[in-house]
Length: 164
Image 1 (cartoon, rainbow, N blue to C red):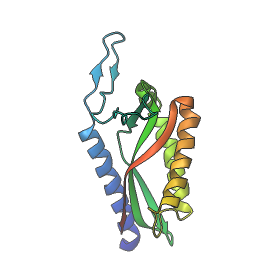
Image 2 (tube, rainbow, N blue to C red):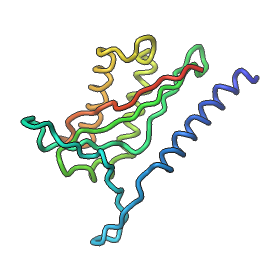
Image 3 (cartoon, helix red, strand yellow):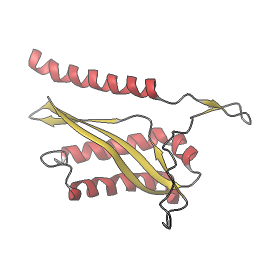
């Protein structure tokens, strides 16, 4: 019984710790004086300056507030957890659009990540360029489907796998 309960308990603790860290480290909301609503505060690294002479002079990189936790199921049990941080490359000034649609984006991204995990995308040398390119393209398609032409790509800024 304990062998079946331990991986589930570890997954819940890991997810809870990730969510707790996300809330703890989330930026304080700011008050929008025009509408009286609270808007998320911009991250320091949200809009990175483009390299001199680059064509992407009108792009922002919007970092999603919380990490994504993906369980890897092996033989009917959780054999590992993959934790990812994502940023979305968007047209300059579109950060609020991303934050407004973040719940739908997270849902779509999680579905892509779960499908990738179920196909074995996080097994073996999961960080090889081919596997990462496939994952980025699938995530970018979700972003484009939800955000439209303001979405230009998805960046995987952090990735880690922890075997149980």
